[in-house]
Image 1 (spheres, rainbow, N blue to C red):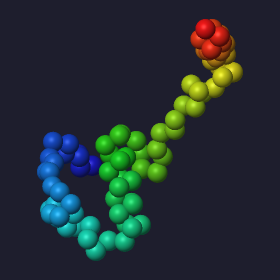
Image 2: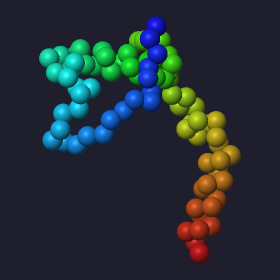
Image 3: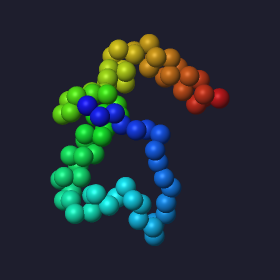
Length: 81
């Protein structure tokens, strides 16, 4: 598998077309989305079609019940000052 070269980049502006865009000019949106998905899988090191899932248990109030109680107490003390 080819390695993604993370050291190559160029700067540009809205009115100048960068040379990296030229191969994608004739592509449809679906084809560009497939290329984008592949480049993301290579750069973030996961298999194509199986992106990593976000751990939503961090935001669970059941799991972090003591932290929620602590925040409520701080809010009550701050609100009544």
